[in-house]
Length: 401
Ligand code: ADP
Image 1 (cartoon, rainbow, N blue to C red):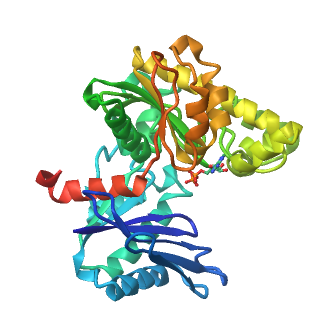
Image 2: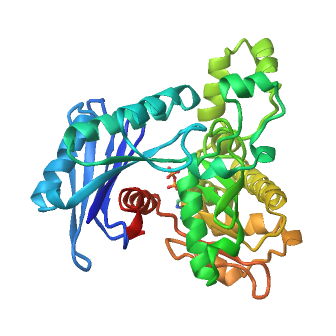
């Protein structure tokens, strides 16, 4: 049985067809610049051994519907059309309503739409992807898997902000947290690598991609996380500022004449590593530039690691006892220097780097990077598509999981 997993962004559609039990992927791809003249879609068909093929198709201004038609046509070519049993969608914001995946009904779709004010950049794209998939695969069950759901176990002490209560009760101002699909996946993998049941482990997980967040996972449940009402809070990210003084908006509006919308846009798209380095939001390029002596790049990497270490230490408060830390996402899985700089700031948690193991844990080679007899530090490759497929299959056939 195969599951089609869809992750739709504002002008992109990432998809994979995989076996929820094993994670084996038969077909995957990415459509980009949807709606623009240059729209295109890359398809990767897995083959036996090193086999397989990659194709790129022009979509000629096409949007989600055209991209879905190509996925459907390729499934038919591969003879897989009738073997796909469900479609799993990544949905960024499920508000307080969703603490688990949900089969998409008109009512559930309405609830996802109700969360648009909380995630105006993400939920509309997710809805467009769901509607395109419902048209292309009307007979298949469609399941929403939420990035926020994992964090619905946060205790009140972790999710409430110290703001007027009416903002919370009337407008839902609270910490929701994001990247839950990845945090829960890597926590499970880490338990497997440590040879211990997840139910007895207290882990700090750091998902470091273009967006970055840390999570405190106690017995497989999220009890603390750095992202909040929106994915802007917390760590320094590629182009997002992370934490700033909440007084910044008022001050800047007065002294610069920028509007609130402009300030928020700049904090989302022109800040973070990009702003600190004056160069790029891409960590790989920053490391190369820092090695060549670029001052801004060095500062950006240093501040990134400093704020990440602070974030990880704050998750220790949520956990009380820490049994291990986990790095994942493009930066976490590949940047030995960020991991080294971060762990160097956390000796009081019992963390110490194994330099050789850290240098070897790159390019998809996860593993242990902590010194022997110290607190375990792991690099785990995340696989959000597989997690979404598992959650989708688990909801539809609970006994199979
Ligand atoms: P997304 O959040 O878009 O899924 P990724 O998880 O792919 O992003 O992470 C992207 C980040 O990972 C970028 O900053 C990129 O530079 C970084 N990255 C990828 N490979 C390496 C590498 N070999 N060394 C350092 N950073 C890397």
